[in-house]
View: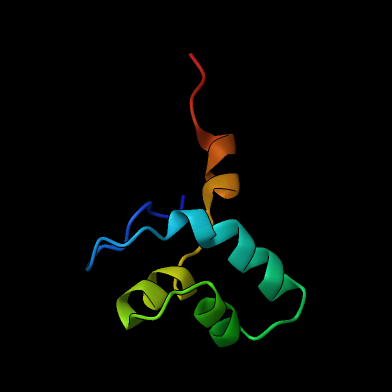
Length: 66
């Protein structure tokens, strides 16, 4: 869906780094190097970024408009 604002485990802000992470990975940089350079060191925060699936664009057409 939408990237969570904070890590579920430790509470560190992760949403502000999402756009930069996606942009750099799409340009071909390895995800582990991008996460390290964005100061996402803890494995719980790395999990938040690596396991996120952006489904909002797939779900929006099915929302009811009243």
